[in-house]
Length: 453
Image (spheres, one colour):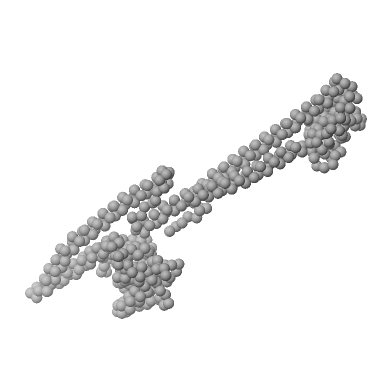
């Protein structure tokens, strides 16, 4: 059965798609939130610096320059340069007060590095500069607190992103795995149907979702198909049963007529032909009845452990002389191979007999027919091959149909049911049969599960 790998399945790809979209949306939302937070922190810092600048500058409006210088020095002593910076510079660039020497800066708000104002380290400061009389007043505050908050925000966003990714991936895998398991059950049911088991049904979860709806429709279709097939099978069986008795009576009448000595030679010949045709019709109906019986599963009660090697060996011994009489060779290759299976000995033997007889009846003189048995991966494969004319590739599936015959086989005896019977027997044993090219000729390969020790 074909099993789709999880990462190639539709539920997994949908989970990846929507999970990726969710993660992308979260990352974009987080990035926008971070940018908004960063802008708000900068705005808050600007307001703080501007308020301090306004307080210091207002001192000049009500007092003289000495009072401003005194106020600035007081602020500078109370606030270390690591947190806030103050400076009053005269027109010549000389510092009159403060804790830093600030170079000429554009008036208004700006950002400077610590080294730009004569400090050590890599700190940044948000400063505001402006005219206070003839002097330049500069007030600034470190970004340290703002940077700490941004670091916390980035770390929180990073861990949150990791958590979201883990949850999205795990959730996607769980959802995809559950959906895929339900799809696998549908595939398993369809595989069983393809092998001839029309009694299988797709299990329903009962939650009324779309997969349940599809499963319900499949079950309805299978129920209808099962009824139709069973009806057709029963009709075929009934017809065969109803015709079997009159056909047997007809055969007996013809045989009785053929046995008479007072018939003209031409009449006797015609009656003999009629008897042969009657035998062929009887054989056809017997085969149809047997196929119906096999497909109904009635022969499973006769299952036992049998070895395909023993059956193939017996068939090879019996038909080797028949093949030789027809100018053919029947050989076998199953030395040191054992193929124990659970099955019906009579039916499995009949299966190999049909295949060998088909090869003998439809191949020319000089053909080599081979029986091969191999065991691999808990399965036994039996092959009946020949180097005869073969079967066209487009006809290989059709030959398993009931009463189907190739054009070149219509002149030879047979009912077109031999391979139909083979397939019915293989299906009964839970195996499968294929016809491959043997270059030249064909190889009919039958695979059946072996019995576990």
